[in-house]
Image 1 (cartoon, protein in one colour):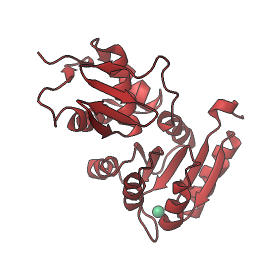
Image 2 (image 1 turned 180 degrees about the vertical axis):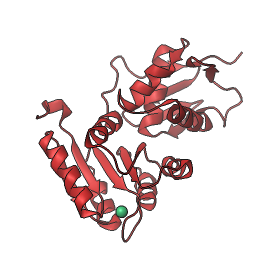
Image 3 (image 1 turned 90 degrees about the vertical axis):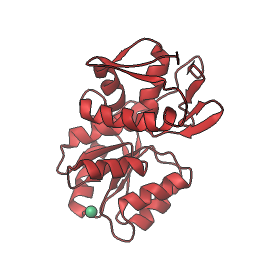
Image 4 (image 1 turned 120 degrees about the vertical axis):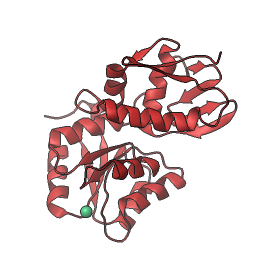
Length: 230
Ligand code: CA
């Protein structure tokens, strides 16, 4: 099955295990995507920095430079390419470290190829909503630069954080249910409440914590909303 032109993605796979890399390559090419591969962190970073990649699939354990280091260096260089990190262990600490270094999502090995593709689609760049950048109570988010702005302070976000904030802004001050936020960020096959809570925690640390009044409010058991400071 091939992709319509708009769904064809250029995917960079940085993975040192040859069998895994070959499986991913074969599957994604059969699905109509364009795949490039690097087997170590140094060449992977150089390839990702060229800027002609839609999504990076990044193994955590790599020779020459590990995945977390690569992720951090990419972000420090101002490169916002969506990163799906592959981890061997399903530990919260690993996930939080990955998110802290700028990964957008993670997948625990072994994984099904269909899930990999669903995650790739969830983190890939989405078209900016028409009608400009939504704003609420001095907070805006521009998906073209993956940057939020609040009280004239610019706040770079990950793809996941940005997609969640964009929906909250579009609907503000209405409540956005958990299911819609999860679907927006991860697609139908992806995330869960725990992953959502982790992302909202990170988002709050960036757009609420440094300011006097929080804008993101929890509606217990239902979802989240943006609300003006009282
Ligand atoms: Ca590895």
